[in-house]
Image (cartoon, rainbow, N blue to C red; front, side):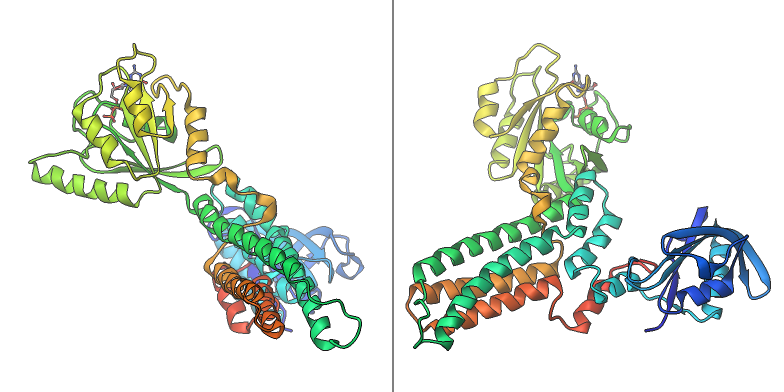
Length: 452
Ligand code: GDP
């Protein structure tokens, strides 16, 4: 296989840049490009570093550090050399060019990780998790992606596959040696196992939605009548002023949006300040946009002013949120309570009392958000379905398990049961990257950056 090279650090100016080389010729290429001070590259073992000068043929480009990993103890499983130089765009490009002049070819997107997969260093689901670790914005998703990279989903899939294999082995033994002393197939046992497996696959499918929320963030629409404290809440969450905090009603005409990371969770907040009846044409456009935003949001945060009696607008708001995943935030609890809490409690299953101005009880609000979107239900160590490819494999495996279950209860031939289970096993193997086409592998790595 060819030896590849790429700049592994992002483009732009920085403290340093890393040029990564992987393949049989990595060390011989490094010897042409890098001249250590008082060292000989040939004498270096794996995981060793040295300092020296970097050249393009005769021309010195920079000084830097060379780090060697020897096959198979490297990210790709091949010989890998990493050259760290100063983090200028030109200098890093020149170092890469020098590696290419010395015999490397430019790496494609995700080619280092692809080689790691092909050399058995990672399963496909672990390789896919690398991109999630790189892209993670919230701490909670980072932790989940890291568990996934360590093989959380792979282990869960292997466990389910093993359970299916055990059933398959029982069926095969019975089909292959019906006349011998093979015990008859225990249909009750098989049915209960298939039901358990079906539930496990269901749980995995559910993890797709939660994983998506963790990765992409939760779309939250903040609604409530003017002066309830929506902007103040939003500003508190964002940590800086963006909305206009004012006592004048109806100042915010359009949607103010903010992405905030709170307690490791990404919230996409939209301040839908003025959902109400209006004759003003400009305001009507804003109201329409806000209604759409509210409809598409995964969570509505309805803010009420606890220091005022409940108004008709509040009642209308409560009615309009009847079928929405929602949290009622009763704000301004630092002031004397005038709102009728029984109406609020009747309208919402989740109610949090806060003072946005005084930063009081915001932790409880965040805990409530987590519960409302069921993010806490995701067990990072069990892994999660991270993309459409993985989801399609689980859906197909589940369809086959359900067919097997039907076959098991309706007394059709054991052979058919065996075929369905075998097919479910194959879909789960595709999930982990066993028995999949080059085309799918290529599609997975197209999402990666060059140098990873
Ligand atoms: P919005 O129209 O719903 O966005 O309301 P604002 O965030 O602009 O707040 C309206 C007024 O209520 C401002 O004067 C805020 O300072 C005030 N306010 C907001 N939250 C609180 C709170 O928790 N306690 C008190 N006493 N005042 C608050």
